Image 1 (cartoon, one colour):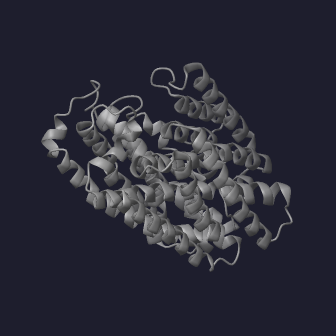
Image 2 (spheres, rainbow, N blue to C red):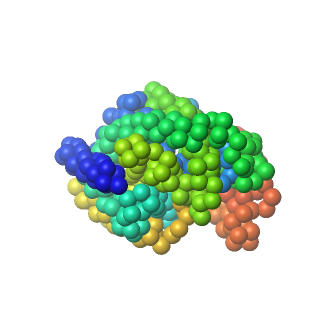
Length: 464
C-alpha cells in the first residue's frame, strides 16, 4: 500500500509541476486554445491517444469484459473506427477551414458555417453533456484510489480534479499536449507490464479460456446490441465529432500532421482494444463473484500483481483517467470562455481577458465535474450521456457543413431538435435500453439525419 501511495503522489506532483513550467510559455488565447497551431504528428498522436484511453476504456471496459466477455472489444474498437474517419476526412477538412478563418473552437466553426443561434444552442447542449464525461473520468479515479489505497471516494475524485485543473489552467492545449506525452508513456508502459503478469497470475491462457461464463454470449465477439457491435452507433460518431478532438486537430500545423497523428492514434486504439476485454476475463477467472463489475480492474491491481507492478499499473490507470479528463475540461473551458462568454456576454473582450476567463472557467468546470462525480455511481452511464448527446447534436452540423454545400442553419436547426427530442423520448420510454436494435443514441441520430434530408429535399446535392 505504501508503494502505491508514494508512486501516485510523486507522479501527481510531477504532472502539476510540468504543466506549470510549460504554462509559462502561454502568451495569449491562441496558445491556450490551439497551441499556436504548431502541433506536429507526434504531439497530435500523443494528445489524441492520451485523451481516448480514459475511464471508459480502462475501468469501464474492463468491467464490461468481466460481465460480458470479448464483446467489450467494441467499446475501444468503435473509438478506433471513428478515429479513422477523423484522420482521413473530417479532421483535415476542419483544420483547413479553422486555419483559413482563424477559428479556435467548434463553436467558431458553427457560427462561421451557420449562425450565431446554432453556435449558442449547440454549445449549451454540449456543455452539459461534457460535464458528464469529466465526471466519468473522476468516478474512475475515485473508484480506483478507494479500492487500491483506501482513499475515500470523494477525496479521490477531488484529488484527480485538482491535478487536472492545475496543469490545464496553466496553459490549456499547449500544456496538455506535452503533459499527455508523459501520461501516454506511463499508461502504455504500465499496461505492457501489467497485462502479461496478470494473465500469468491467473494460470495462463488455458485457465482463462476455461473460465465459467456468466452468460451464453460471453465468448461472442460479434454480439448484437450493447455491449457489442451496436457500440459503433453509440461511440463511433463521437470520435470524429467531439469538439475536444476536433480542436486538437485545429492545433495541428498542417493536414499531414492530422492524418499521421490521428491515424497513428487509431492504430493505437485498435491494438489496445483487446486489453480491457482480456483484463476483464482474467478478473473473472481470478475473482468470479465480485459484487460490482467496476471493481474488476482494482482487484487485479491489488491482488493479481506484486506491489511494485501493481503501483505501475495504478499509475497507468491514473494516467488514462487524467488525460481523458483534461480533454473534457478542454471542451468545457473553450465552450464557456470562447463560445459563450466571448460571443454572447462580452464580445469586446480582448485576448488577455479571454485567457483570464478561460483559466477561471477551468477551475469552475473542474469543481462541477468533481461534484457530479461524487453524486453519480456508474462510469459507463455518465459517459453514455455524453456520447449520445454528441452524436445526435453534431453529426448533421459537422458532416453536412463539410460535405453538402446546401446545408444551412435552416436545415441544421430541425435536425438538432429532432435528434435530441427522439433521443430523450426513447431514453425515457424505454428506460435507456431502446427498442430492439435501436438504442436511444441510434434513434436520435437517425431522426437527425431524416430531418436534415427532408429539409434539403428536393435537389439534395445540387447548389441553390
